[in-house]
Every structure is written in structure tokens, then in C-alpha cells.
Image 1 (cartoon, rainbow, N blue to C red):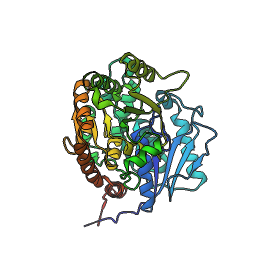
Image 2: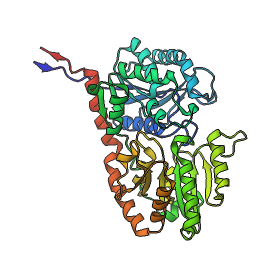
Image 3: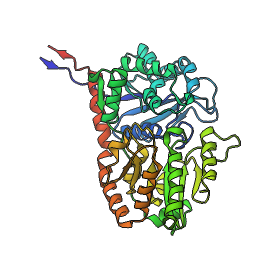
Image 4: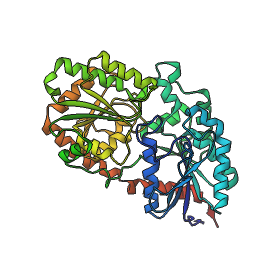
Amino acid sequence: MTLAATPKIKRIAMLSVHTCPLAMLGGKKTGGMNVYVRDFSRELGRQGIFVDVFTRSQDDCVPRVVHELGSGGRVIHIPAGPEKPIPVDQVGNHLDEFTAGVLAFATSENIQYDLIHSHYWLSGLVADKLRDTWQVPIIHMFHTLGHMKNQIAQSNNQRASEARLAGEYKVMALADKLIAATLAEEAQLKELYDADPAKIAIIPPGVDLERFQPIAKDVAKKRVGIPCGDTNILFAGRIEPLKGIDTMLRAMALIQEQRPDVLNNACMAIIGGDPWADDLDEEMARLQQLRTDLDIHDLVTFLGAKDQEILPNYYAAAEVVVMPSHYESFGMVALEAMAMGTPVIASEVGGLAHLVKHGVTGYHVPSRNPEALAARIYEMLSNQDCRQQMGQQARNYARQYDWANIVNRMMAVYEDSVSGKIAVE
């Protein structure tokens, strides 16, 4: 008895329904998942796989098909509901329209996909509908989980909806393979959702080592407009409560009160959101008011969302990147910063607890603990030799996450799913 030959995978349908992989980092719903879908798809293209990324159109002025993923990669904007940004919990009302749009596109171009790779629970529900027609396997990644969000929620409006939880359970059952970024996420899938362990493969996200490589600090500071003699502390990500930005602001206030000498010509830059909007997002308004209340207006600046192409310069210009999150399934920002040779101080939660190596590539601190965070920021800023050593170690450590390695691991999962390992006589 032998195993059937594995069919060659030529074309993949990538689903990112609620957010576009080309969006600026730090927008309302743009973060690590956007980076993942974009860079993972690009590496697939480099390895000769055609990838179509389907996402909901949020602007009727953007071309329906965008060729910005390199060879063999496209982002396809599907009209589904109003062509403008809408709350994620409303996107679910338009999944049938989205599915019909994807099917129509594939039919119009006479395309046959070998498998579907879906991201976030909404995309998983669309994948199920597409499989009814295409009859191909579904590989799914959640990136964030509703039950984990509920564990750190501090108010009802921060909790995941019942529709989301029900959708996540459904996708757990229907997917052929579930990809977990870390051992911690694997445990969450099994313990919180009773996911089938045989379905789960642990494959972390990767990093583009050509884009994210060390840049001379003075060059990087000049590019982003930071005086060369200034000290920069960086946060990059979505502006929402689970990111723990308030903990970081309180830590800065403590340093200002107890160790003001280390903050001479220092600034904490926060990348994400829209700090100049006429109608400020609730969390942005709360954080700006907290900055005023703590009297650290001169220490903290909000830079808004930034194009992903310029981010390497911000990482390189920083002495340290801080990730004070209450929950992270992985922590793409931390990996990118480490690849640049910049050490990271991160909450010891979720993927960050595995990704950042305490005392080697940066430091762990307890979540929601401004005193501990302040101590580590002070330690990092006051010890240049430590920063440089950790930065070099961080760069070396990040090499194992090169996208080529990650895609090779994922291709093995793809091939097993497509072949089904069917035994033939």
C-alpha cells in the first residue's frame, strides 16, 4: 500500500474579510493580522504560488484588484454592504453578499483554487460557504479569540459578542486545519473551545528580514524627524484597551517623578489611531486625557497610524519598543522590532511570553503593572551597553522567523490537507 502523490498546490484563496492587508498599521482594526496576511502572501508568491486575498471593499475609489503583493499576489476588494469602514460586528450582516462576490470573481476569471486559508472568525464562516461550491480544504487562523478577550475585558462593551463566540465554535468544527501561533494559543483552542487536537498545527508568524534589518540610529532618526540626540521609546499598534497603553503612560509618569534625569530629551511615541480626528475614538480620547492628568504632555506624543513601509525607521530610531498588552496571540510588532535589532519590553502574556526572551532580547513585565514597567524602561534607558547587547541578541533570535522558513512549514500543512493522505492500493 502506498500514499497517493500529493497534488501540486498552485493557487490559494486567502480570506481577510473585515480588514485589508494593505491598510496602515495602527488603524481601528489594523495590526498584526494585516501584516501577517500581506507578508505571508508575498512569500507564497516568491515561492511560485498564486494568491488571491479577498477583503471587503471599504472605499469605492480603490481599484477592485490591486497588484501590490509581488509576483502572483493580488488583493481583491469585494463590495459587501456599504463601501466604507463599518464596525466589525456589522460585517457579519454582509457575509452572504461577500461570498457571492468571491464566487462571481472566481467564475469570471475561470479560476480554481486548491485550498482556502481564512483569517479571523468572520472569514472562517465565508470559507465554509465557499467550500460548498469549491470542495477544497479550509486552513484557518483566528489571530485573536473571543474568550481570551472576555478574560481581560473591564466592561461589557469590551466583551466579545455571543455571535462571535458562536462563530468561533462553528469555525473550530468546520476547518480542516487550525493554525496556532504558539503553544499558548494551542492550549487556548483546546481548553476554551474543545478544539480537536489532531486539527491543530503550531506555526508562528514570520518576519521579512530584508525589510526589517538594522538601520543606523542617526539615519533612522533623521528620516522620521527625531533629533539625533533625543531618546525615543516606541509603541506601535491599535489604540484599544487591551493594548495596555494606559499602563505605559502611568509608567512614564512614575519615571518622571522618581528618575527625571533619564528622561532628558526623551519622548514616548505612540503609533496608531487618529489623534487629530474631530470626533475622537473613545480610547484615544481617554488616553489623551490621561496624558494631561498625569502631566506628561511633553513626554508623550501621538503620531497616528503610519504606512507599513516607514515603520522600520521608527523601530530603528527607538531605544526600546514597549508592548504593555493585556493579551496578544503572538505579537508581530515585537518580532519586527527584534529583527531591527531593537530590544522589547513586553507584558508576560499570550504570545509575548514566548516570543520575547526575558533578559536576552528584552524584558517581561506583569500586565497592568506600571511600577514594574517603569523600572524596566529606566533600566533600559540608563544602560546603553545592555540595550546594544540585547538588540544584537534580538536580531539573531529573529532570524529563525524568516518568512521563507514559515511558509515552508505551512506548505507541509497545505499539502497534507489537499492530499488528505489518502491511501491507495
